[in-house]
Image (cartoon, rainbow, N blue to C red; front, side, top):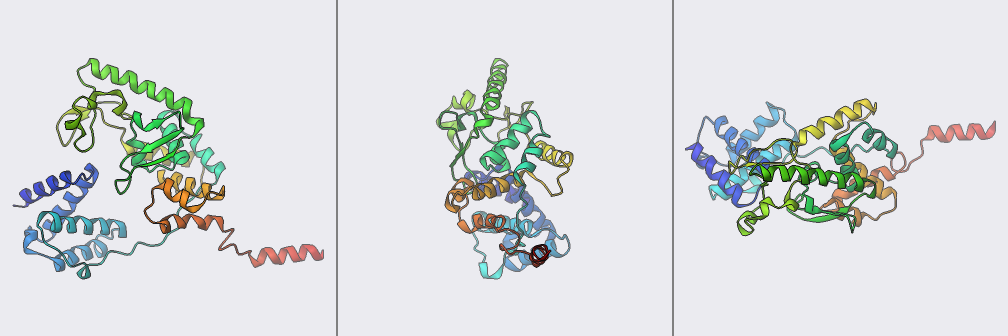
Length: 326
């Protein structure tokens, strides 16, 4: 029964166009929820059992607030969309995420970090910083998303399934043109071998039967080898695995001897902060980042305040007064 239910959950997630990563995560949380309650069917349970599972995650498994909230979202989706049962929100509460300020690199630190990289990973890191892309937004770029004439990148189906346009750094254009030529040659090889098909989102593959083999739909950063699509079973060339870029960034930060915890998202944080430092207004930065609420963007204004809230340390003032008397 549990297997059948999980199959229904997968089908519903696909109908509603959730990403494969989200599908895998939601199905896994549903499975863990069922096993935690000794394989009871979720239809026989409700808010109290969900709450006890979340408490187990927080207290026994010591998971982060964001992980706990993902589990809650998965279970609410299961009850609402598959079992058609509404769970009263008042009976459950999201874990409060700690309010942490983002790690931001100075401009010279960004350049030092990028200079430790090479090849495709360097180009991708330049786009993370130069265009403010999220990791998966960068990895999922397609050839058609690059507009050299208008020096822009169209981010398709970003967070919240929204499209947006971000700047294309002029300094990466030569390398990006070479990358596209490499993709063209690879695609021609795939076509010659009887392949050349790429995954298309939603129902585009049905609406445009030949589009999956068109060059413009190919991933900008394709994987070195073709693989089987876990959903359709078809052999396709997917995009690069994001973990490769994550490892490369971590290693580059170590080589650059940066005394900060650096991830791919740190480059996006730095993009936003540096734009504000350059005088761009908060609404423009919000739009470029794809934030739904400007309050999310406001967190980057902390760096604009010299020190803490633009307060000058009394130690500096005392030393200045002492120097003046001398």
